[in-house]
Length: 182
Length: 182
Image (cartoon, rainbow over all chains, first blue to last red; front, side):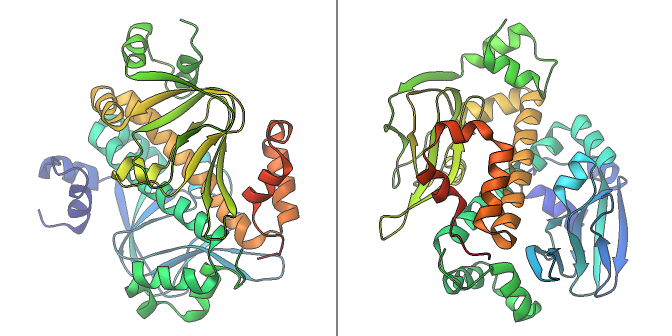
């Protein structure tokens, strides 16, 4: 079994068997979206978490003046959704759109919860993912509080060099926030 | 069984039995610290996650100019540690000190992982906690990107009114960040 999603699971739960993976994979649906198309829209309910097979996406908030504030990028092997809307069954406050033509695997909350109940290792996989995500967001908050935009730019470049090949500079700026030291 | 920690678990995993809880509780150690004392220090390894039985604590970063940037507060029923240092076995970049005399229950990484392996519902409990934490941090990042300090102050007051009774205004400001709209 040579699926990229299986490899992705195996990074945390190497014990996953081909048989279990085949069963798990049936709970995902595959969609393709063109550049500029949405997978999540503000004011709508969010039915899925999304794992990026191919492409590049951004999650952003539009303020009253129409300015874009970017919460997250996602490339191959990353997960992206409005987690508040998805988990708590409320309407989204953000948009998620494709920066490139993209393919994602969608997992509904119902199937997510079902798989977590059925497989302890899937619960463990998503627990580890949430924990890593939590740690990354804590680092970003510290960086927003203490670093200048220039320092944040350099950190991001070091951490995700490929992002700078694929994402326009304007969007990187909308991710980093205002230039002043906070 | 009328333990506050058991009640705290039951909010997410109501099926926890007295017998299992007694066993789980043996994996925690109880410590008391006076106001101003540390439970985590920068440049040291972090051996425990901490659940607050009583008191109030702050997690903060000190920048090169000695300015405090507050990452998190914690009161009764909250969890607090340097999750990056704790999970990845690296030295801490932050301090965690008591704003009031405090009592916390400490859970080592070894015991944390052991309990998660032994009880699927404990893995589920911590997975839910991480997820809720992740969502809260996403909201805070959006707020740091798009709101003024005044708006962030009002949001925090609405969300945690008791914090304003227990924490000096200077610390609230160090949590909220700089006054300008970002």
